[in-house]
Amino acid sequence: MTTFYRRLTRFDYLQPASLDEALSMLGSYKGDAKPLAGGTDLIPQIKGREMAALRVVVDLKAIPGLDAITYDATKGLSIGATATVTAVERSPLVRQYYPMLANALTTMASPQVRNRATITGNICSAVPSADSAPTLLAMEAILRLQNQKGERLVPITQFFTGPRQTVLANDELITEIRIPVPPPKSHGVYLKLSPRKSMDLAVVGVAAFVVREGETCKDVRIALGAVAPTPIREARAESALLGKKLTDESIAEAAGAASSECRPIDDHRAAREYRCDMVYVLTKRALTQIKEEAL
Amino acid sequence: MKEIRITVNGKPYELSVRPHATLLEVIREGLGLTGTKEGCGVGECGACTVIMNGKSVNACLVLAPEADGKEITTIEGLANGDKLDPIQQAFYEIGGLQCGFCTPGMIMSTKALLADNPEPSDQEIRKGLEGNFCRCTGYTKIFESVREASRKSRG
Image (cartoon, rainbow over all chains, first blue to last red; front, top):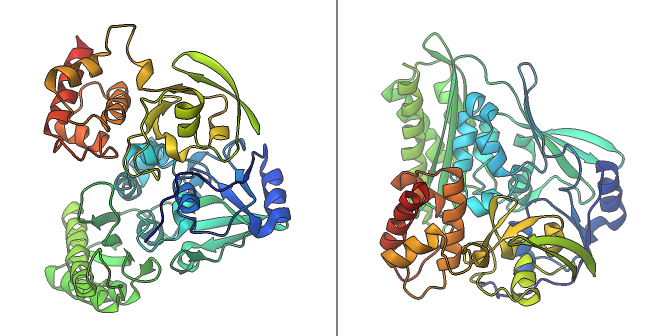
């Protein structure tokens, strides 16, 4: 049970005017500083006393250009660290080239939260049910991590290490999320199951992405949220479809593989068995939608 | 302390704020504008919804220094003297409230919704108000008030 505290703990607020300045602040404060983008996770965590007292928050929103959303026909989509969920969800570029991402973002929280929250923050918080994660896994996003010393590119498939745990060091920032150009003849669907239609966490989230050549599946990516310690890709379900046609039988086989691979927790939101069953149902439903869309 | 300049309901303020204060605390305790309510304090209920630079936000999740340079509208900024905003008039006429605690947040979310989409469908109204909880009404009359507000605002 989280104790409710009305007030935040004491901390100082820094607002760097450049990325270099932000990285040097994080470098010098190490674990005593937290970067602040939308604050929609950070502030409740501080109010809930879920983290050790911090000395400073480093607000990234004054850094010019860090909220950019750009698309390039060879490099794909680039989402800056402070681009809000609303900005990404409404971006005509995202809607045109990455409709699955736009749809996934629309299922998150509320307008008030989406107006502040960022996708980078959603990823960094690394809760297993993060709504942006299955889509980013299925689209094979690359994260650009920077600290004072330099940068590294981390595929999102290697980013999450456990519930609320990632490979991000405390002096590092994700400065950019890159999503490759979707191949021709590709279709993606994200389906979220939650007890309530709004303001709820996913009990199961399924992102399916299929690239076809003729009628056979040339590339299949199935990613699940909320059914393992981290958002995951389902290799067995993917290979069950690879090189095959999307038929009711092949779809059922892939859905069965996804359901037997996942390792959900049993909690007050949903029982383990229910989550596994729903992985089957939603994977099947997502792939069936892709099959029908592509006709 | 941090020095900030904010405009609230058209009026400029220069304030000295604690860096770990929320915008909600500044609005309610600093400026005495208690129409904006604190419900959950963690961005779930929407009772503290205000409009900041044209976007609805939960004031409980915004740090006071983050509001520096911003234009903020609270529930107190909607009426023009004794003349209610069409949204307030619609909630009043339809009776889109019971205890009234969630109403300022509902109205501010409606304001943001209609500014963006003057003629929302029922589905869009539900989506637009998804971040505002009401524990009394069951929402039917609230949604009806929003439909009425949309009609009134379009004249």
